View 1 (cartoon, rainbow, N blue to C red):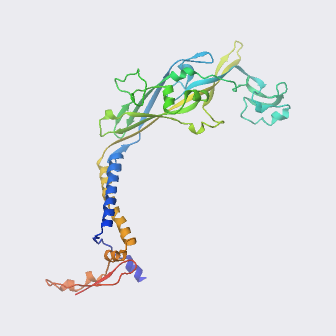
View 2: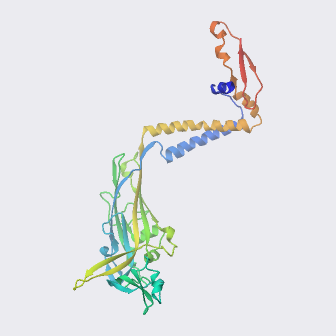
View 3: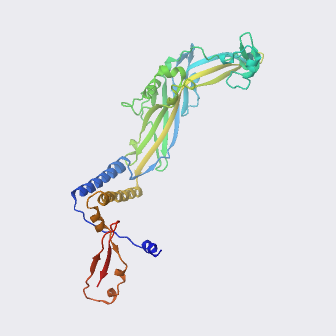
Length: 396
């Protein structure tokens, strides 16, 4: 017990040992050089660790689509094929559509072949289903061998062939984006005062243009218009504001990238593409209501805005400089591991590096009353134990 307490109340101080070894010296300098290169090249130059950063970007997006096309022999303009109509950061361009006209609320046979029947018993088991075009009544219409539904009739038949609106390739998308970095009170927009709006975006020659051709957006996202226009899909337009505010604020410009957001379901037969339904309601002269049902296949566009701005600040600079200076000492730790465990003279190195000094040195009475005289201190070295520590005693 006394030994444990004695060992607990000890103090360790650094002892410098000069090891004249070419191999260890080279390892030490190479490790120090690599650490310095990492901090200078990656931490300070690439990651700009001397800056304070603002990622809490405030953003607003306004969009506008233009173009005309023909769908099911009808001329379509923006009010017909763009939904929703508010011009927000998410909008859909309809490229194909099933139309079921003159639907009224009544009973009629279901269209889907999954609801084939010969007796009412075949239909009763479907009464709780939600995949039919209406509420299954449980009755079988034997003339057509289909279950009866109560709903908007005639039921929608979406298994017919459709033709996509090929003119949609040339539709244009105008994106107006303004952002603010609240930490630095910096406000920027993706258009300047003299921006030419008769341009088309090009990732190499015209990166500042805010007008995008629909076919080009699909091409940049790695998609083909013919394939995606039949079943629809989701495309992301990413606007990244990566700004170094140590430079002039005019250099803070957005970078556009494009990706298909539903790429995980491209080969899925059950959830492939993107579609939705909407209806237009009318009233007949007798006051009865009827509607035209539309099942639209559309390309959905999501405008995703992100930002990261940095500016020099003393506090992160000091913190990272101190971290760099401290990390250089890791080279010493590496060399100590090699010397203590892998070199032939490991035991001799341990004996020189570790020593135990008894408390009698600091409390010897000769240090108190002996004045002006020269002291002779004899060191007695004991043999090294497994840890390489030595016990040293001082005598007058």
